[in-house]
Image (cartoon, rainbow, N blue to C red; front, side):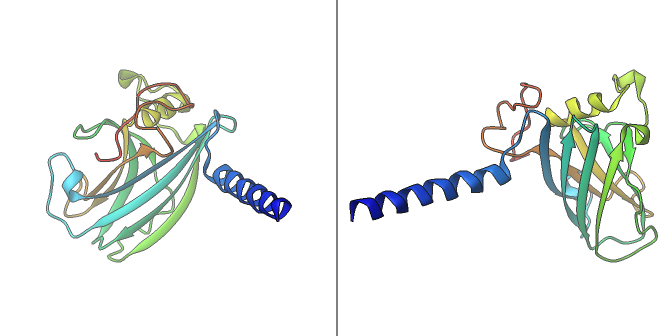
Length: 182
């Protein structure tokens, strides 16, 4: 009986450890998540549009892989990632490729950006993809979907690092990050 209990405990501990590995971030990757609407735009707008996005920053490959689910969008014109904190407008640094422009429907899309996709913003200190990674790791980037009715932005998603204790620091850059409640 004692050996059986030990084996069950060992299996449970191994299962728990393996489950955490799937969600763990490394020093070379960081997962960002956000959900948003017109309420997060600067200034806020009334819109039925809502969206979620998940992005993985990878310092080894210098790539940013993202996926987004967008609902209730009307006459989509463009989508971008901007550098700027919650409540602040910032410049476009990455354009979302393959958007179903002129659509008025729900859609899901996945893509990957490389360094060559970056729009340099010297005035804001964005000279390479690592600069975007630093902004995003500190909670200072957002995804924005633009429509014909709201060319300045219809849906804003503030991207925040995910994971245990990432509200205070993360292993990606060891800097403060945004709180999930923003």
